[in-house]
Image (tube, rainbow, N blue to C red; front, side, top):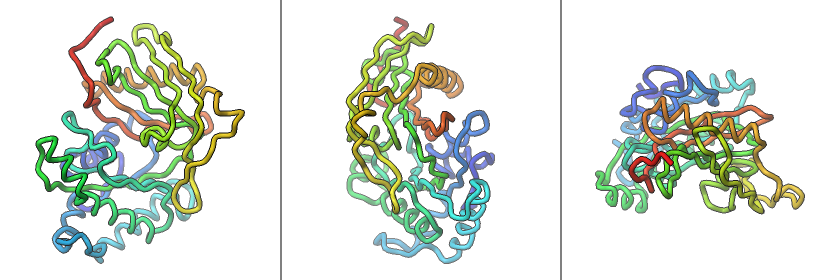
Amino acid sequence: MEIVWLGQGECQDCVLVGGKGANLCHLAAAYRAPPAFCLTASAFGRWRLQAADGAAPFPRDLYAPLAAAYQRLGELCGVVQPRVAVRSSALGEDGHVASFAGQHATYLNVRGVEAVVDAVLACWRSVQSPHAIAYRRRQGLRAETEMAVLVQQLIPADASVVVFSANPVTGNRAVCVINANWGLGESIVGGSVTPDTYVVRKADLAVQQRQIADKSCMTVPAANGVQEIQVPRWLRRQPALNEDQIVEMARLVIMLEAGMGWPVDVECVYRHGELYLLQCRPITTGMKPRRTT
């Protein structure tokens, strides 16, 4: 099975779609997530058989199924050529031991079948990059791994949010930590901006700390891909989330933590006031024994 859809039972199998795809599929039935399909580890395996040097082309017999899936995604999105995010989902990624954050390729605002094919190939090749291999070795994992790829509708975010259901630095599980900025989330996860930060007490959803940053830049869709632009001066010191959204974020990660059974690291976006869940993975750094105060 080379292609599975978000929401299908097979998409919950991390052996097929990796941790990123499996976690998102598990949650898609209960939460709003952009429609997506996944090229499984089986598709990667077929490419790797002919890609000893990482230069093999996209498997010819997979082109038509990928094109058909992309066309169907367009129908779900209501456009002929949807703009998508193409994200690596390596087997073992977004697990309890290692998150693999930033180790493998992600491409945003990809449009057209040929561009999607190129992005999938780049994701597959990223599994062989020196820094990804070194990362796996540092984590005590095999140098070789398999790679699934998630192709998901791109939501042109008004604001993006990264939320932790525990403090990832201190390990305090009595609070959740919310980071937010204008535009797409790459400015937060890539560290190019200091985001707004909120620390919310889980017991009563009270905001214990609030830091509204001078958010100088944001990531937005461009003609091909994305670009980083300056935030208008009048908007830089404005909070990226309103009070209701802060509470919504806190409630979301509390529910996700309860449902998944472990402290979660969640990526979301807001578009026209609607919340979309993009990713959910375990917190793998900074966790200490449970604290209740």
